[in-house]
Amino acid sequence: PAGTAHPGWTPAGLLRRARRVLHDNWTGSSTVPSRALYPHQWSWDSAFIAIGLRHFAPERARRELTTLFAAQWADGRVPHIVFNPAVPLDAYFPSPDFWRSATDGAAAGAPATVQTSGLVQPPVHALAAWLTHLADPAGSGRTGFLAGLYPKLTAWQRYLTGPRDLGGRGLAAIVHPWESGMDNSPCWDAPLARVAPAPPGSFRRCDLDHGDPGDRPTDLDYRRYVALARTYRDHGYHDARTPHSFAVEDPGFNALLILAEHALAEIAQALGADPTDHRIHAEELTNALVKRCWDGRTGLFLCHDLIAGRTLPARSATGLLPLVVPGLPGHIADALLRTMEGEHFSLGHGTRLVPSYDLCGKAFDASRYWRGPAWFNVNWLIERGLREQGRPARAAGLRSAILGAAADSGFAEYLDPYTEQPHGARNFSWTAALAADLLE
Ligand code: 2M8
View 1: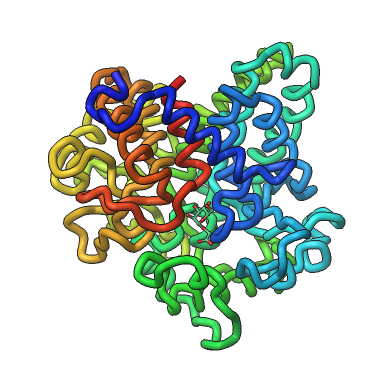
View 2: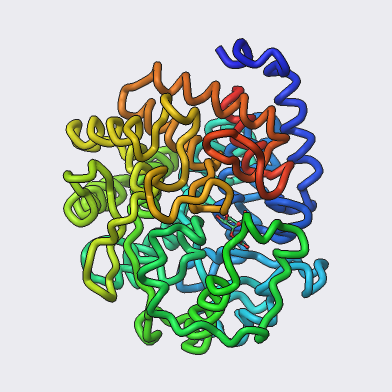
């Protein structure tokens, strides 16, 4: 059980500390990922945060999600950042004056009264909404939480399975590394190399006011992120009209899309609606994911570059995330487990937590963001995946490693996968929220 291997903390003490972090990061209508580094609302962060909050503050969990969906665009997209107007422009880059969503995104249906980015992040929201409902069905029913969110969640999914099926292959594509949530993953190195970088000095990186440059993406990465986002903005955030130089099918993103369809089927049923469409979408997406991204040779799901028309060979934790998909073919689940415990990820051998990228890969860097460090949301998803695939003993081991590392690191943003030395922000919201969830 949690706690026994870590005499330095108790479940009750850890839960108290996690609640304190989430209390301190609450703004009144949503939760910031980190006070200094990320002072606005982030899309997939909010989903993970709600999953934790639901256990002890279900009203705040519901509010977290309804605040995010109040900023949804008319085309269905849920923006990756919802800006807090009270925060100064120079606190985070890119700020609202870069995205100009209310004007430049107007044709795509950006809201007029709240400033957002035009990009998206992985769709963990339907799962978060369903789990939030289950934690407090009475409060959820009284406030019409599920009934209010269901059409919005469905529109979000249909945006991703519609306009974002850029390859016509039955999967959602991302058009910017920020959309993966794994910003500087080595998977993006090859497709990003095609992007002409924005001129140096044409923007200022506020992240370096708070983060160690050795832990963050490089300046060259940022110049390419800026160039891509500007092009998308300058085409009105219109998916078909933008001349994309980056368009990739990411298996983790699509696995979460599938999980969301399953959650929507549950939500539909709870509301007395017909879940059949969601079940059909889930099945079609699962078949497409296996057909397009499964790589039997490496025993991993791989990303697919739609512009170059080729599979990307980099081994990333995103390729393990399909473990969460219900009904994954048994031989694939078995192979994923072998890969996770083999030399590239070393779970249970060289590491107690799954690293974000191949330990043997040329681009591996134990401290730089999504190029090797272990992340709590990824490990929480893998713990869930292990249970989904009928591996409760392995899941229990990972759960206790996650809790120990969250406690010892002061709820760090990410960790060196070998030493578990903390990097990035401390008192990071999703680390606290997901630890709280595992404690319940
Ligand atoms: C990181 O991404 C943002 C851009 O969206 C950044 O680096 O400024 C990523 O880790 C992303 O997954 C996360 O949602 C965000 C906020 O925690 O930070």
